[in-house]
Image 1 (cartoon, rainbow, N blue to C red):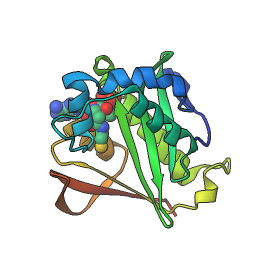
Image 2: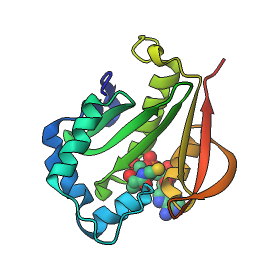
Image 3: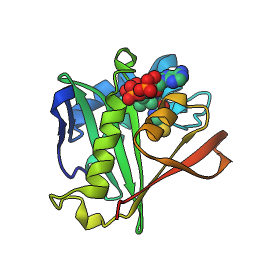
Image 4: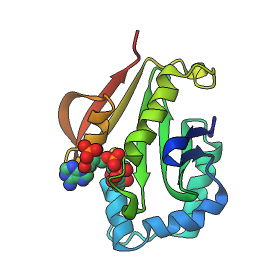
Length: 182
Ligand SMILES: CC(C)(COP(=O)(O)OP(=O)(O)OC[C@H]1O[C@@H](n2cnc3c(N)ncnc32)[C@H](O)[C@@H]1OP(=O)(O)O)[C@@H](O)C(=O)NCCC(=O)NCCS
């Protein structure tokens, strides 16, 4: 589901509602060798013969818009849709945020750091009330231990590694935690 727009005006970033029309864009993101690599970085262990389809992308976006177990945003940067960020809702905690930026030409500009910081801030310290209905006290995220850029982003914004690394779906993972300030 989509709850509210978040603007990071000084960096020309808007976190907006996913739209069905984004399926054409996301199909490009996940196509070819680069697309496969992107999905694997996120921890998707894809079958060798997996190929993306517009139907699958549309279904995924319909879930983003209507699903009750996730809060989703499309990331717009300088007027272009470049990725997505989402939180999964569980009864006592929030999982995420998880982020994917598909346009490699904008890597290293601090976009993920700002987006993750804004979403964590919304989830844990939102004063407007739109996040308060979830009443979360902590965020738990995770990433592959060999995904250096997202580890750096997580640590820059204050996530702390928690527990031992573990293997799942053919990859090795580390969990991270961020607690609400008292
Ligand atoms: C991870 C991702 C979101 C980062 O986006 P981004 O906008 O480039 O991130 P930022 O610019 O905010 O920060 C990246 C940091 O990683 C660092 N970094 C990037 N590649 C690195 C590398 N190979 N080695 C060391 N540090 C690296 C950058 O220098 C920067 O840190 P700094 O600010 O201290 O210099 C983007 O690479 C992505 O979408 N990757 C594919 C999907 C993915 O892995 N998502 C996370 C799934 S859990």
